[in-house]
Length: 373
Ligand SMILES: [Zn+2]
Image 1 (spheres, helix red, strand yellow):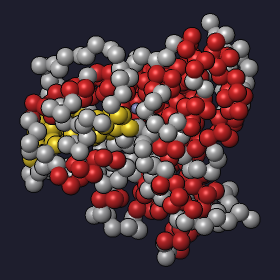
Image 2: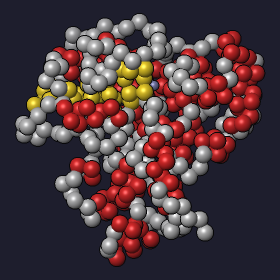
Image 3: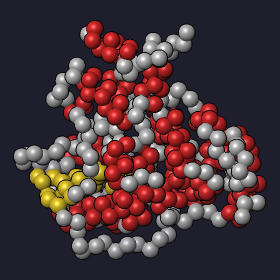
Image 4: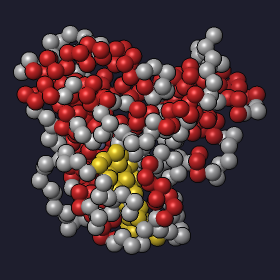
């Protein structure tokens, strides 16, 4: 019988520092800057305290904690909500909303989604609360036990939290919603922790970001520096890059103990995918001999190898189906299996069309890319 203490889950929170969706001041985008448009998307500025004001989310927000505590207005367009404090001009909020909204569909398409299909796929509640919700021991109610045993825990070794977490992660978005809504009834309905997320992309303009770190993709959307601090937040390529991180995180129906586990995946996957699919420059194939996958995986400076991440990802991307690649997020989300086990389980191929294991990919990457036409 497998039995793991729940406290093990806390270990993984620590690895969240340094962030899979972090952007630092690397020159990873050489595309010409898209000038800020003077034609903003339509929408409304809403002041905090006014009727119907939507509070900034409380979970899975990264550096968006700034907006959770300090934002006092937002601009809401058809698909974006940009939060800021009163020192930020309305025009800056509108310019950011315009940049994000205009790049959403292209970013989703690069990840093989449309705005509509992503909307169907997104979890409607925080992946953080799922880990609490599926812990049946919190419910002193017979109907919950019956529900979880015969419903979402069906065929599952239910006494193991890890088994349950893995099963939960395998549920379809609709099943996840049904499970959430049943179980949320046993909690305080007014607690924002249990509230449904916005369907829109939630952006925080944070004065805490800028200079060394200007952008971060999150489960809810994007955290950006204020435009006056860093003009890159108005450039298409960075909106697209962060939106790709945002889509990566939608594969997580559950997170362990407070962190979405994307932060523990190799950056050649998470950053490489965002760089490559956003159209940023990547290392040349002829330069592959200088950097191995181990070099990237073991780098102390997480920002050193952005172009190399892009090249490594491009090798996987151009020889495989992106749905299979994206299943790496889903499969590792519950932390039941390691990245290496997930990689080996999906049959990714090299450019010869041969199935490769993660260890063979790591061992042969430089040789294969050098011979790859
Ligand atoms: Zn990134």
